Length: 63
Length: 302
Image (cartoon, rainbow over all chains, first blue to last red; front, side, top):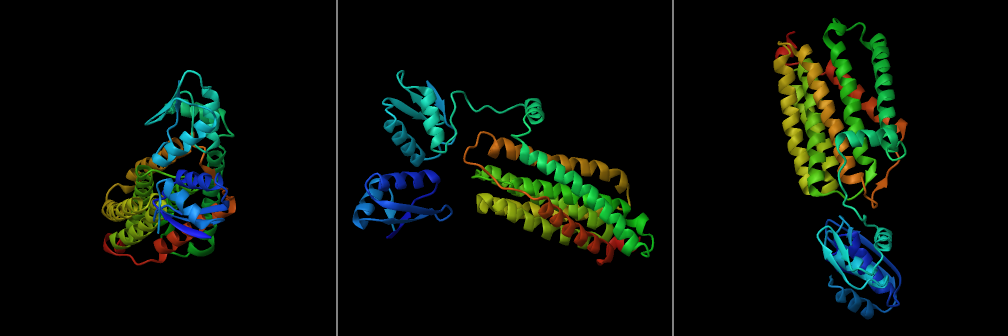
């Protein structure tokens, strides 16, 4: 699974989303960050809808 | 008790550290601009440890800057901490000696037959070698640390590299080849180096590097071309010393602003062969332009 998240601009954003997903059972979370475009590519294994809700709960939006 | 944490940049940093502290059973804490104030019960040393484990700088005392004399003493006493700088100083000195030897060999191999070569070029060969190793050392020092830099630091890096490169290359070629080549080559080289080094912080650093390159290159060429009929050989030692001090100052600023206390910073290995090769190529091109490049204006008639 892969999601594109906008508004990610630093390593703290990466840590925040990684922790939020992993703590809720989403596995193999990997995030590659494009700091200039403020976009993060989130790849993972697990429930996509759950992952979207968790990411949005942290205050981020998906593209 | 306050834990100083100067890397707090945004809401995400605060959220990450809030979660970290809550998971470690800290209950009452409040974030400020440069740190977090803990309640009476929490162990501040534990807080420092868990914040550092998350990759942020943290300490119980403020991250104060060292004065110049304190930094110098630290530099002499902590060779391990300044291993990159010691290595680079060694590379710079060895490269300067080797480049000087290369110039002597090149003279006997290629330039001995060029009329009045020594009287026309000997000082400029010395200044070329000094300029090349000085600029290379500053640029390699910037690139030997991988870390996030603020816009202000990135702009300073772009501007200093662009301006000093332009001035040094421009003045040498301005004196030997005239204003046209001095300004053109000085500006192009300086703009390229200004962009490459200024882009560490994005468009602001790139623009600053470009503008400084244009200004330094044209101004360097102008100084060289205009002062060649004046006392340029008396002017040059002062000019070189001041420019090399500015490049040293860039390295000093880099350590203060980017390296010191920065746990997120990563060192990038530097190799002598790479450093020497870049310097040798740059110097060779500079000498070829100096000796065989077109000459115009006053440089064309003297």
